Length: 421
Image (cartoon, rainbow, N blue to C red; front, side, top):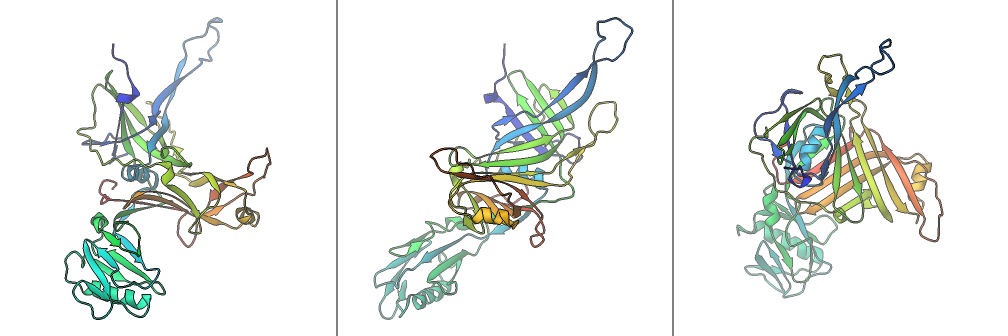
């Protein structure tokens, strides 16, 4: 007799055109860690009297269909969940960038290599592939900028070169926005390069809090051994939360509210579409405030909720009519070793701070959650033993007037955004 195992379970997802109407066509095959999305229908004791002490048969109650889906933090698949939480993103291509820093003026024989093409610094008049050393490092970088921008080499002129004011840095920006610029290589014999290639090229998908309406989805949970495929329709994404730790696999918990559930003997997801899966680890995460990493941070979490309200109208099938977003909420916590009073002073004075939660996997693959205006409570400091003293701040977010929203989520990957819209 066949038995169901989670190792063979499948999770498919597709956006609906009409709330509660099962989406047709090819679904996305979603990676997940756990899923308890499902419908349940309770029983009500019959209150009738006069038929003896033994109770009459119970009555069926209304149907509730909700649950949590734990998913890996992946820079491509995560955009599908974020679209359900925040609505359609604003998507724009982003050019790859990099730099070469000169701590001192180059000396004769030093080299840099730009996209496989080597340039040598020389004393005196420069020839082909050479850069004349000037009196100062800034002047030499300026000469380098001019030579590279004037180059007719197809490998070199794929980028634009500049020197940021007051620096001794050669800045390189690829001319073609998108992920292709991440293959542009950099090297230097003594100067410091930002990395072996330009980075950050791809598509930036910007999600903003506060959307007045949100999409709904059809989600299929499949157990092929039985076989049993549970199709959930009218799935609204209620909340998403992230826990930041020093080690482990990064994951997000999505809370969903569905309207209906139908069991099929076969999958209704067509030929599922699979994206390139790239798992992110906790060690690739960071939490910042004011653009700087928070010192002595030991753990953190952030949760955004749409605070969906079920529309529980009277109908003969026991289902809800929908789930509408109400006042959104941003909550979370940061735990720090007590080493200074910076955060406590902000909490005591009622001054808001900004918090940035991010994961960076590789060039052009990252997630950044920016809470523009966060208020911290004043925590109690407890000394519980000889170890370090911890302070925990349970924060709340608010709408920032300058930013125009409470939260901005930027997902950078190599997808053009059609997968999300």
